[in-house]
Length: 91
Image (cartoon, rainbow, N blue to C red; front, side, top):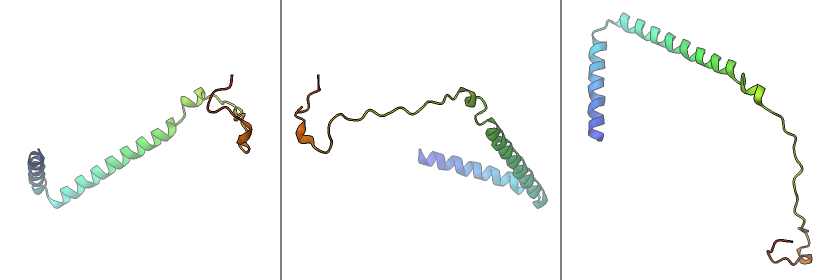
C-alpha cells in the first residue's frame, strides 16, 4: 500500500513539473500572485463571515439560569466518630 502511494505521489510530481516547466518565469510569478490573492481573499471572507455570524441565532436562545445552592453532606466531616451508619443509607 505504501509503495502504491509513493508511486502516485511521484506521478503527480512529474506531471506538475512538466506543466510548470513549460511556463515562463513571468507566467509562474503571475500564477503565484493570483493564487496567493485568491486564497487570501477567500480566507479573509470566511473569517469575517464567521465572526459576523457568532451568536447571531444562538444569542436569542440562551437562557440565563441562576446558581442553585449545593446540597452539602449532612454528616460531620470533622468528627466522624459520631455517626455509625456503616455505609447504609439513612431511612
